[in-house]
Length: 163
Image (cartoon, rainbow, N blue to C red; front, side, top):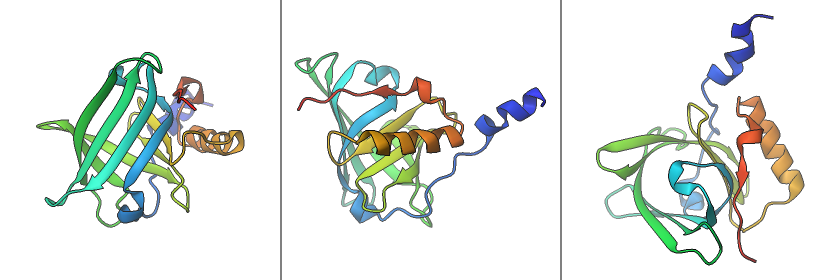
Protein backbone atom coordinates (compact mmCIF):
# COMPACT_ATOMS: atom_id res chain seq x y z
CA UNK A 1 0.00 0.00 0.00
CA UNK A 2 1.43 3.37 -0.91
CA UNK A 3 1.55 6.37 1.38
CA UNK A 4 -0.76 8.25 -0.97
CA UNK A 5 -3.43 5.59 -0.47
CA UNK A 6 -3.11 5.89 3.30
CA UNK A 7 -3.83 9.59 3.25
CA UNK A 8 -6.42 9.58 0.47
CA UNK A 9 -9.36 9.29 2.84
CA UNK A 10 -8.35 12.44 4.69
CA UNK A 11 -8.00 14.34 1.42
CA UNK A 12 -11.45 13.50 0.05
CA UNK A 13 -14.12 16.16 0.16
CA UNK A 14 -16.38 15.86 3.19
CA UNK A 15 -19.77 14.42 2.28
CA UNK A 16 -22.67 16.55 3.46
CA UNK A 17 -26.16 15.30 4.17
CA UNK A 18 -28.59 15.20 1.25
CA UNK A 19 -30.85 17.96 2.54
CA UNK A 20 -31.37 20.23 5.55
CA UNK A 21 -34.84 21.58 6.33
CA UNK A 22 -33.70 24.97 7.59
CA UNK A 23 -36.87 25.67 9.55
CA UNK A 24 -36.39 22.44 11.52
CA UNK A 25 -32.69 23.19 11.99
CA UNK A 26 -33.26 26.59 13.59
CA UNK A 27 -33.19 26.91 17.39
CA UNK A 28 -30.91 25.76 20.18
CA UNK A 29 -28.12 23.18 19.80
CA UNK A 30 -25.90 22.09 22.71
CA UNK A 31 -22.30 21.43 21.68
CA UNK A 32 -21.71 17.89 22.98
CA UNK A 33 -18.20 17.39 21.60
CA UNK A 34 -15.83 19.11 19.22
CA UNK A 35 -12.41 19.55 17.79
CA UNK A 36 -12.28 23.08 19.11
CA UNK A 37 -11.11 26.35 17.69
CA UNK A 38 -8.81 28.40 19.94
CA UNK A 39 -11.85 30.29 21.22
CA UNK A 40 -13.67 27.14 22.34
CA UNK A 41 -10.85 25.48 24.29
CA UNK A 42 -12.03 24.91 27.86
CA UNK A 43 -15.65 25.80 27.05
CA UNK A 44 -18.38 24.52 29.37
CA UNK A 45 -22.15 24.68 28.71
CA UNK A 46 -21.55 25.53 25.04
CA UNK A 47 -24.70 26.46 23.13
CA UNK A 48 -25.28 27.43 19.49
CA UNK A 49 -28.51 29.25 18.62
CA UNK A 50 -29.70 29.69 15.02
CA UNK A 51 -32.46 32.08 13.91
CA UNK A 52 -33.57 33.34 10.49
CA UNK A 53 -33.49 37.10 10.30
CA UNK A 54 -35.38 39.56 8.12
CA UNK A 55 -32.35 40.10 5.86
CA UNK A 56 -32.36 36.49 4.61
CA UNK A 57 -29.42 35.08 6.52
CA UNK A 58 -29.09 33.21 9.82
CA UNK A 59 -28.16 34.88 13.08
CA UNK A 60 -25.87 32.58 15.05
CA UNK A 61 -25.13 33.09 18.74
CA UNK A 62 -22.48 30.92 20.38
CA UNK A 63 -22.27 31.11 24.17
CA UNK A 64 -20.30 29.21 26.82
CA UNK A 65 -18.76 29.43 30.27
CA UNK A 66 -15.00 29.94 30.08
CA UNK A 67 -12.89 27.17 31.66
CA UNK A 68 -15.51 25.96 34.20
CA UNK A 69 -19.23 25.72 34.91
CA UNK A 70 -19.00 28.92 36.96
CA UNK A 71 -16.61 30.67 34.55
CA UNK A 72 -17.39 33.94 32.85
CA UNK A 73 -20.20 33.56 30.29
CA UNK A 74 -18.88 34.47 26.84
CA UNK A 75 -20.97 35.15 23.75
CA UNK A 76 -20.07 35.43 20.07
CA UNK A 77 -22.58 36.67 17.51
CA UNK A 78 -22.06 35.54 13.92
CA UNK A 79 -23.90 35.41 10.60
CA UNK A 80 -24.47 32.32 8.48
CA UNK A 81 -25.20 32.28 4.77
CA UNK A 82 -26.53 29.32 2.80
CA UNK A 83 -23.85 28.45 0.24
CA UNK A 84 -25.64 25.53 -1.44
CA UNK A 85 -29.37 26.22 -1.65
CA UNK A 86 -30.08 22.86 -3.30
CA UNK A 87 -29.13 20.89 -0.18
CA UNK A 88 -28.91 23.66 2.46
CA UNK A 89 -26.05 21.57 3.89
CA UNK A 90 -23.20 23.92 2.95
CA UNK A 91 -23.06 27.25 4.74
CA UNK A 92 -20.55 30.00 5.27
CA UNK A 93 -20.15 31.37 8.80
CA UNK A 94 -19.03 34.95 9.24
CA UNK A 95 -17.56 35.58 12.70
CA UNK A 96 -16.59 39.06 11.50
CA UNK A 97 -16.54 40.89 8.18
CA UNK A 98 -15.17 40.03 5.64
CA UNK A 99 -14.19 36.51 6.81
CA UNK A 100 -16.56 33.68 5.79
CA UNK A 101 -15.66 30.13 6.82
CA UNK A 102 -17.03 26.81 5.51
CA UNK A 103 -19.67 25.14 7.65
CA UNK A 104 -20.73 21.69 6.43
CA UNK A 105 -23.66 19.68 7.80
CA UNK A 106 -22.15 16.18 7.51
CA UNK A 107 -24.60 14.28 9.72
CA UNK A 108 -28.14 15.04 10.83
CA UNK A 109 -30.58 12.90 12.75
CA UNK A 110 -33.82 12.34 10.82
CA UNK A 111 -35.71 13.86 13.77
CA UNK A 112 -33.25 16.77 14.02
CA UNK A 113 -32.17 15.71 17.52
CA UNK A 114 -28.44 15.79 16.72
CA UNK A 115 -26.20 17.15 14.00
CA UNK A 116 -22.52 17.10 13.10
CA UNK A 117 -20.80 20.08 11.53
CA UNK A 118 -17.53 19.52 9.70
CA UNK A 119 -14.73 21.64 8.33
CA UNK A 120 -13.05 20.76 4.99
CA UNK A 121 -9.54 20.32 6.43
CA UNK A 122 -10.97 18.27 9.34
CA UNK A 123 -9.17 20.63 11.70
CA UNK A 124 -12.47 21.49 13.43
CA UNK A 125 -15.68 19.63 14.22
CA UNK A 126 -18.87 20.11 16.21
CA UNK A 127 -21.26 17.41 17.44
CA UNK A 128 -24.45 19.07 18.65
CA UNK A 129 -27.71 17.92 20.18
CA UNK A 130 -31.06 19.40 21.13
CA UNK A 131 -30.38 18.12 24.66
CA UNK A 132 -27.29 18.37 26.86
CA UNK A 133 -26.42 14.69 26.38
CA UNK A 134 -26.19 12.06 23.68
CA UNK A 135 -26.23 8.39 24.63
CA UNK A 136 -23.03 6.38 24.21
CA UNK A 137 -24.39 4.25 21.37
CA UNK A 138 -25.38 7.32 19.33
CA UNK A 139 -21.96 8.86 19.94
CA UNK A 140 -20.25 5.61 18.88
CA UNK A 141 -22.22 5.60 15.62
CA UNK A 142 -21.35 9.27 15.01
CA UNK A 143 -17.64 8.63 15.72
CA UNK A 144 -17.65 5.67 13.30
CA UNK A 145 -19.16 7.87 10.57
CA UNK A 146 -16.59 10.57 11.28
CA UNK A 147 -13.70 8.15 10.98
CA UNK A 148 -15.15 6.97 7.65
CA UNK A 149 -15.01 10.63 6.53
CA UNK A 150 -11.35 10.92 7.51
CA UNK A 151 -11.63 12.47 10.97
CA UNK A 152 -9.32 11.33 13.77
CA UNK A 153 -11.80 10.50 16.57
CA UNK A 154 -9.03 10.74 19.17
CA UNK A 155 -8.96 14.51 18.56
CA UNK A 156 -12.62 14.96 19.57
CA UNK A 157 -13.14 16.48 23.01
CA UNK A 158 -16.31 16.23 25.07
CA UNK A 159 -17.82 19.55 26.12
CA UNK A 160 -19.01 19.48 29.75
CA UNK A 161 -22.56 20.61 30.53
CA UNK A 162 -24.07 21.24 33.95
CA UNK A 163 -27.02 19.02 34.83
